[in-house]
Length: 507
Image 1 (cartoon, rainbow, N blue to C red):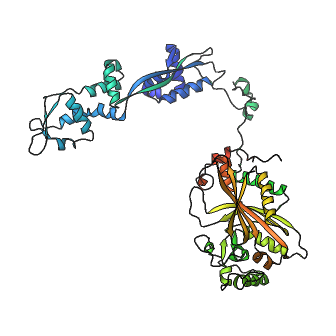
Image 2 (cartoon, rainbow, N blue to C red; image 1 turned 180 degrees about the vertical axis):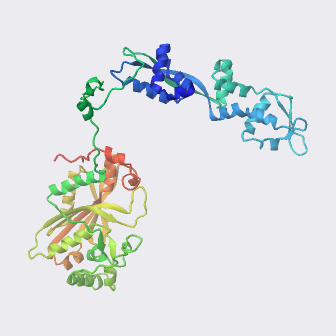
């Protein structure tokens, strides 16, 4: 008979039971058929989806029952902790308490419960330590018997006080059982004919579609959204910054050369070759190709001279400048190297024309990774070259730039950069933190950097820069940069985050 039931579909078994009894409980059916309860629940839901959904009626029910914990199941099978400990005591000689406490993993609990039950006595005056003796000859393991009754479903055989004690010992738990009461629907039948979901060419050719029942289509339902790519929060904020630069009349610099020579990255910016930022602790050096070869030699000689001997009103650094050091290829440490190339190109024009450039791209530094630092990050840079620009022009354009970002409260602090003089750090008042925080760096490029390029003496260049990651983290409420960039990024975060909208000034 069991073999015949195995061949009958579960749907037909459920319908047959409903037909015989008028109503069934899915939990009881699962026990009767010896299958997982979720299988029966899935079968009921499947039957509800057939036809117009009126074959059966299913109402959810909720009940509570006691269930053995994993420890309770072990006790029900092997005996209670106190009974096991009692069995470990020698009937006549007793057992040393120190040895007894090592006889089982739960000996401490068993000892306590056995003493409370009056099963044991202890002699504390023994020569080799306290010794435990049996106080009674036999015991009844009521805890094991009670658990066996609970496991068999005979909870009424166990008193409420006993159940409370078993729960206190974490041997049983009260669990909530959700099931369905299934009754006959208006279209109840025990013979199933699943409706067709597709009209096939074969049905049309043979005419069999006339005798088929089709599942009704819901033409008002929404289709599945097609999978598509999503912009990373960094790219959304980058788009906003780029738009602001374009609104202010800036031209975007090409930034596709991640590998740069030390000459353009450091030397052209009047940064000395012995500067600590140029060593391996701050810079990634490229092994292959190790050296760059293509340089504007006349300009290179002027850079060498201003470093080693001075010039243009400067005494220089007065050291032995080496071409070998300048030729070393690196991963660029800032996009100011791109600015240096663009300014040199600007200086080669027959007639100087004022220019405004910007760039937003990746730079690389040998940083110690933490919640706010990565070895690879983005730098935003703005550069303005014109006649007789002053520090006042720099402050004015910074106010305009940050106003477009919605940042109105600014302060400036003197700073040092090898290639700008004067230099300023830019601070903004953070309303959330209630304090001033640094948001960028700025300055006027030194004559020792500009004049060797060939720019006219009365041309000044002002510049400023800030990171892309920090404002993005603030905008999207991200505390750890590694949650935004890297191999552990939650792609769902990238998909769900809205477009970036900076709180720009209405003026």
